[in-house]
Amino acid sequence: MINTNEILDTIHMIDQQHLDVRTITMGISLLDCADSDPKIACRKIYDKITRYADRLVSTGEDIEREYGIPIVNKRISVTPMALVAGASEAKDYVPFAVAMDDAAKATGVNFIGGFSALVQKGATPADRKLIASIPEALARTQYVCSSVNVGSTKAGINMNAVGVMGRIIKECAELTADQAGFGCAKLVVFCNAVEDNPFMAGAFHGVGEGDCVINVGVSGPGVVHHALQSVKGMPFDEVAETIKKTAFRITRMGQLVAQEASRRLGVPFGIVDLSLAPTPAIGDSVARILEEMGLEACGTHGTTAALALLNDAVKKGGVMASSHVGGLSGAFIPVSEDEGMIAAAQSGALTLDKLEAMTCVCSVGLDMIAVPGDTSSDTISAIIADEAAIGMVNSKTTAVRIIPAPGKKVGDMVEFGGLLGSAPVMPVHPFSSHAFVARGGRIPAPMQSLKN
Image (cartoon, rainbow, N blue to C red; front, side, top):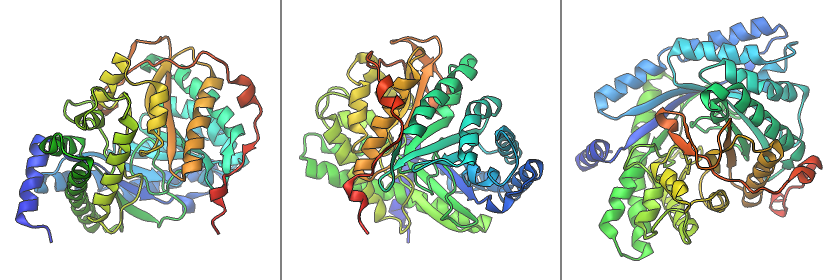
């Protein structure tokens, strides 16, 4: 049971410390929408999404009103579209993205994810068609998000796909140049992608999931930052315990919202993702948590150790509060979406190399990072390969969401607005990775893949 003190604590965290439910995401299977006629398939997709998610937004708003808990986003994730569209005779898959977008508009959600392909070991003709369609699909739609999984601990890294994705990202930036390359902000390249992630842009509804499910993502960097102010100068044991207790309270709120949304919608409850997802708002920053541990600036020596402690303590506290913790669950470090990260990057304390090191110990990877518009596709592919290698070897999810901002150079700012914030353009290494990327093939899976 949730007692009165927990309720009062939660009210204070919401009112003063930016605590919110970042998203209620409805996962919907579209496997039964496959059809050889692409027009019929698109109609089935639209019909099923709008039928299942018809009350998603209104239900979220009702819960917000009745419980006083901010629910920032209401979202939908669907079966990786390459699996659905592959049954059709379509030559390009942009119409499938348009059907998803139309359904998102009709239901009123913020984003819909799942224009996705899973190619960690190889690509089918459907996968190749979907990947080729991504730039135009993201340029022509408003709400559609896309992801491609290019590696896993079991399969290794598909370097052919990695090479292609560097070119796709460049094309996305070019087609949305009038929006500062915004298409790239809706595209994630994964290693070890998970099937129940409620966060965009990487959410999709995995084939191991049921027909429909409700997943909730909570967030509370401001709450953790505030809690750590009570243990200034104390040993790290105390810091870890404080974060664990705070993560427990945050996750309890997410569990409450998830169960209530599940009950009202008549849809099974899936998981609570207890990730600390920052926003550009002052006081809602993961970087400021790390600095509260004693670092002068996020990115200086000690940052990776501080982030490792934070990520581990969040998981330990969260799993005690919900029997169904999943998704990504940890600490996110998206540069453009975290005012502390933005400040650290602008000051030179935080570099791309340091961010890569930090991704070894936290959730996901190089997220919402802007680089010069003239960055080559080979360099972007090599960055993806590095990040995928970290995920593959460490048996964790890693990802790259990078924006080669058209016309921008190092030191410029790229404005996205809203939760996506603004990103300082960060330098990349000037040396070529062309011959490395051009090899193609597959980087073999590491020894830890042989666990059976």
